Length: 362
Image 1 (cartoon, one colour):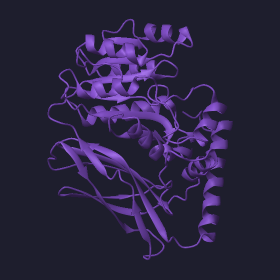
Image 2 (cartoon, rainbow, N blue to C red; image 1 turned 30 degrees about the vertical axis):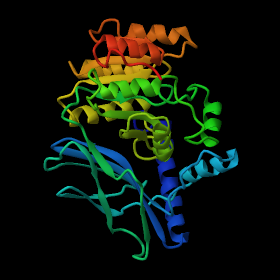
Image 3 (tube, one colour; image 1 turned 180 degrees about the vertical axis):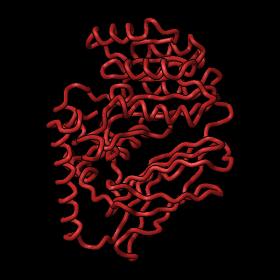
Image 4 (spheres, one colour; image 1 turned 90 degrees about the vertical axis):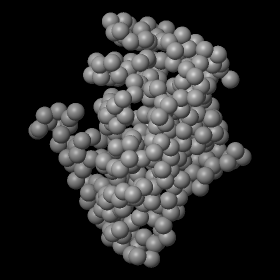
């Protein structure tokens, strides 16, 4: 949260917003008419009574998909293209799923968020139709739409939700070494990055549940920017993680923050939405000991009495203090908590009846 009015930070923040608005206004006058639009759909989720959909509208063609045989330079160019975007504000869309239609308008950064009550949706995947209604500077526009224009509704056999962190929980990043993280991100692809050892097996086992057939819904929450959405989705698919919606973060300048929103506030808001939209299912929280996950998950336990079935925290063993602090954070709470490698977390989850007793790391 920004300091009180009149402070140096607030004045700087307001000046940054004013400069960004001025630059955007100048660029709008200089830009050529839009000839292609990409509607980036972020996989949504829903229940029998409510749907939540997110996405973004960008000018231009979609970023090409990665392949396994590429040079570092080609990977860098693709990653740079994900960040060098031209967002389209004030574009009105019509979202249709099943028998329901819902209008939504993009914000200044091109994002749209739509959440509405709906007629009953059966379990499974429901494809969305997203059409541009108004707000483009020409009607002669080629429209493209990403593959994730859909919402997932949990199976009736689901026994719990799974909410997982991404960085150093499923994806090896080396959080805390900023320069190395940025370099690896800018020169990598979904094919070249490595998952945390045994983490795909852990998430698959939690999805399958104690009898192997639960089909529990999985969600991924991270403070990485939305620009990395297609990269992270491809990484999860390539490494056989369960399919599920991602919550990422908006980087930029707006009325609330500069660069990005507070990590803890962002993750708590995402978790709250998931729990509210699926109120009858307990949740297994999966994270790591390197950042703020223990603090965030402790807060969820305190605020959502009885909703958290277990907390599983991956620890790479590099810093024993991380594990000690994580264990201490939950010492007074009556919720099963495990800290260790993903392989050891499999054993703990089995002992608590969350996964099949014979589930193994692959």
